[in-house]
Amino acid sequence: MTPTLDPEDALAPLFSSADDSALAELSAAELMAQVERQVSRCLTHARRWFPQLPAPQVWGDLRGKSAGQAHFGRGGVRFNKVLLGEQPRIFINEVVPHEMAHWVVHYGISSRVAPHGNEWKTLMVAMFGLPPAVTHRFDTSAASPAPYLYGCGCRDQHGQSRVHGFSLRRHNSVAKGRRYFCKGCRQPLYFMGKAGVVDNTRS
Image (tube, rainbow, N blue to C red):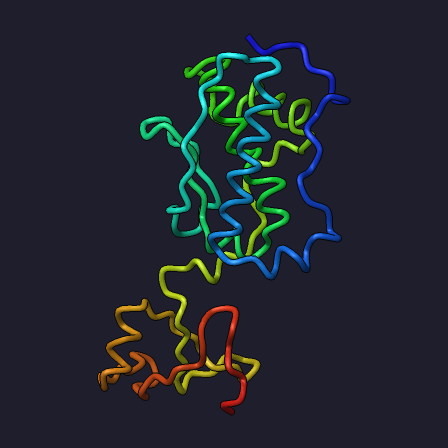
């Protein structure tokens, strides 16, 4: 059963906008340490209402476009280090409590309720002081499985080159001398840059 919660008792954010520059200087390992710190804060806060709540393990091995995942089979929470590095403050302040709210619902209330149901929404608002948003708002281009951008001779109505996404494996093949051609214009593809770091010097 969901406990009676007072929004005034909600957990405060770990970082403010004034911390952005400091967070930007942290390494991936240091950022994950902050994620673990936030997981611990969320757990301690939740144990005010659920004293027997188990502690989750924490991993930074989630890939793709998902920012976080509560993995009950493995007994912990997983996070996407690429997206963490994009906007660390928002990630730590919002994604970590999002996944910890799932953890609290599963082990503190019931494992048979909807993942983003009323129980989860209540905890997000009253326990963690956050809007119950189901999806995140990160730029996932850097976490794409095909982040290497290639152009060709095709042009759209604005004169912009068509962009082809290459995986790391295919990109490495190009570095070894292999050539790829566009099926539309049949011209060889040329490297433009990595997603989020596009080289615009080529005309």
